[in-house]
Amino acid sequence: MTPPTENDEPAGGPSRAFGFDTRSIHAGQRPEPYTGSRAVPIFQTTSYVFEDPDAAAAYFNLQEYGNTYSRIMNPTVAAFEERVASLEGGAGAVAFASGLAAQAAVLFTICQPGDHLVASSALYGGTVTQLKHVTRKLGVELTFVDPDEPTAWQAALRDETKVLYGETIGNPSGNILDIEAIARIARGHGVPLVVDNTFATPYLCRPLEWGADVVVHSATKFIGGHGTSIGGIAVDSGTFDWSNGKFPTVADPSPAYHGLAFHETFGVYGFLMKLRAETLRDLGAALSPFNAFLFLLGLETLPLRLERHVENALAVALFLQGRPGIARVAHPGLPDSPYRPLVEKYLPRGAGAVFSFDLAGGRAAGRRFIQALELWSHLANVGDAKSLVIHPASTTHRQLTDEELAAAGISPGTIRLSVGLENLDDLLWDLEQGLEAAAAGADEPAGEQPPACPLPLDPGVAQ
Ligand SMILES: *Cc1c(COP(=O)(O)O)cnc(C)c1O
Image (cartoon, protein in one colour):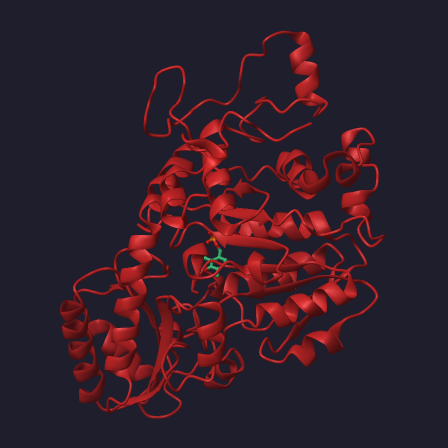
């Protein structure tokens, strides 16, 4: 069986290896042959008429690649999958209803009860919750390690370890993962490295080129780019050897697919086929065609947007650095950042547009700062064209004491920014208002804290 052919190369074909910007616009699509539609059509359909009973049987047996039902595949979603796979340099991709669904599906496909996974401790909050609670509930053990210490990753390995997991740009200190070093450790142990590349996007970094095996994204963020849609995607390199004896979940005959051995049957597409034809089929978190269409539109301007995002973000970080009332600016691209050498290696075009800084005045200063802003939107998201801000200590983490915040790597005055595409002068003008307000009020006496939230908010909704 071969992968789909109707969608795979832009017009002009493989006679030239197109550049990244060209592929952001064309990869995964040719004008649709029936109507000639230049834009990717939104195939808003649940199902597809079979040519004849034999064709239907071949699709369901995975002997032919064809559309059956949109929980498993859909032509609009396929164009999005192929475009992201092209941009990340992978063999293929499977899209999901959210970033969390994509990463859960990848881990669910790799692991089985009794397995162990090693993850960076500096991850998106929702991922930490997912790993700590959901993965454990499935009988998978977990060790969090300091992502900056390759020796810690090495030391955490066990016989049962089946996957290493990190983020290109982590939270909240802007940790940059030494992908090549961690990938080497994973290879040495015969297990894959999975990297969440949401904050970097393939425009800034392509983890597969540094030895990672699977890349996951929350497409909700920079890929969509306009704060309109939730979605996720997993890209596989196609180069990991799933038949090395450690991955019966991928290599052995599958009882959930009448004894099909995915790795042996589909080779480089084995993991992707398992991810789609079993995990996505059975867990059901499919991306809608309409969201795939919006993500395709987002990808067309990804290079242009990211250029402005990183330029504005670095300028904002430089503006904040050294200002009175600011204790720390954790932008990894700043000249004095401890991550500077890793930024130069992995993110030469810029270290992203999401970073945090600490107001010396603590919780009260943070609230005054947020209150005074007019242009920055106070909300729990990142990667929008609009500039976004959140103060974890008064929102997503407000039920935590200062000690508990510290354990999460957040100070009472930590502010997280996602720098958008507006005029830099306007962004700085608004931050100036916030800083003046933060400095103006008297700090609350120690011990006076906002009342505990009756329902603990999931810290996962903030980055
Ligand atoms: C938002 C985010 C996620 C989760 O993605 P959803 O689309 O919200 O499910 C995972 N990782 C990172 C780094 C994120 O920013």
